[in-house]
Length: 251
Image (cartoon, rainbow, N blue to C red; front, side):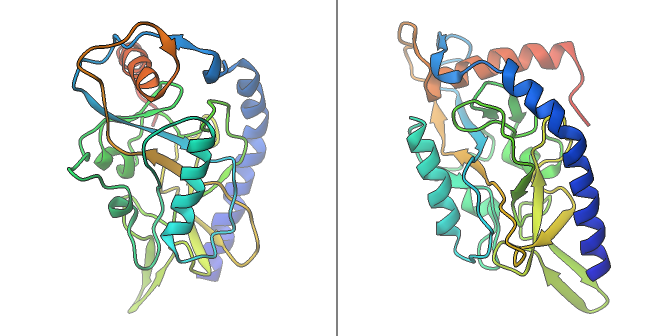
């Protein structure tokens, strides 16, 4: 297991170094979401959807309490003026990410978008399967996320990451001595489960992935408004569907 950890941490750091210039360039080109004005005309009334972002706040992921991570993402979303409830896409020894982000009634089939409009996944299943359409690489304010490490503790089924060798199974949830990482560097193909893990006892700061609760387009769309959850969602569907027709999704 020590060899596996060293291999993972070294290869991930190498990708971060190569991507840093790209991240900085995109940061300059990305428009500020707070200044945008959009119409709620792209999503049909009654459409359900969710939004996602990467936190600017970092954590060492040593806590086993999911409430700690949920509080971090909720605070950041609230400070950015994003309403509704937000959850962290994380797993621990006692709570799996797929359950932590679940809605009542179920929102498992809701499409998921970045707060800037790009479609991340067509459903919760695809969010965890590795077939995401766009990396979660922007903050709650719509800026490019500069931190390459994102703690998830989660594998591609949405449950706590683990590795079995012989009869021994090691777990890599948040709060364990080693935890699974997700990838969010711009241009990265990695999603919630990057296949990479890192020591939580080393004091390495990492971001979190945040996802909103269930959002619904109202029956009657208002006049042009400052960007909001519904406005972002409307922009998201129109832009994402056009892009999906024009080019293949990333692999």
